[in-house]
Image (cartoon, rainbow, N blue to C red; front, side, top):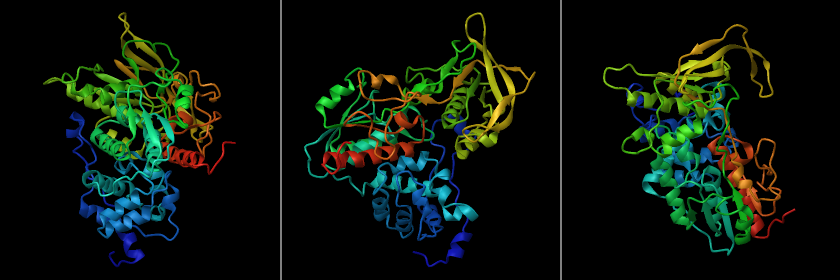
Length: 482
């Protein structure tokens, strides 16, 4: 470790992540953030103060040993850095790319209180990519316990739970409704933010090392009921996510050219519509796209739209427009600041304090415009954000031919079919204990978006990890079902 004082470390400026050129990337799906070099990663690691009471760890939903892996990194011991990382995090190359570190680990960094936080997420990605390339820390399976577990859903919650339980020696079967594993990591997050090779690399390695039985094209509630799974297994974990989209209840919602962000992103990301005609799954989005909402899903949808508009623009044609329509101001935007910044760089148009009231169509039933009303901010609502209030007489029409709804999602109710005793809230989410993941149905645990509603990848991983710990203790007879 370089012999530096705390004051010297605090004076080192945070190292920026190199990105693909903002103009060039509008026309491709290659990853935008290019990653740290080894030299830059070590230089950024030098900024860590190695606090005696590290607040960064408490800010991480899975409790990554942050000071330890950073210390090993700056000392040049990459094997040890990976080992420290994987004490808590099975998917560092993924988390380093998509976690909202600015409100979690980095948001609690002591350096960030007086200046710029250590770029923990970028260092996590560097370590995760190193492990993907070199495989220095193989996953080890304990002796067979004879216990069988069904994990439903191969997204971040299910994957984490499956890996943790398989490492304990239990026989794990992982069920996925789609034709490949990954869940929202594959269908929901664009290639330019999270390359599918990274996701597949992390998953295939874990499945192979730990002998997890992966079964795709299985829809629980149709292929098997929950009770049928319980009859064949000692325990079941539900990590089915929240894939049922929400729509505004306004006139014109059924017009051609209106879709959910889930459908749009699935077509683009999973079915590779951006590679048409090589992949026969086209998505027609016209010339002017309006994405309703301003969360991370909305940013993914609008940035994908911008790229599709560029790719389908003919020689000599003017590029189309991709809009964000959001009823609050920029200060209330829930998406990551980095994603908003990238969207702005790529030419996305932001329409703040604007709320749709009607989707307008022509005689053929196709979208031609979006009638909106201007808003102003009033008193805070239950979320703590100021409530948007319509401005009387401010209606206007935006000329658009595609409307994409990115207004949140709920769990698909199909998993609850013939699942007596599995309680749901009025929002359709499963009722489960937040610390253990236990549901009201014996031997069934649940975690991630199916319990919380749409949230972050790392929070879902945290739920999967907590549930796995409780399931393991229950299966070993260390805890009873109360």
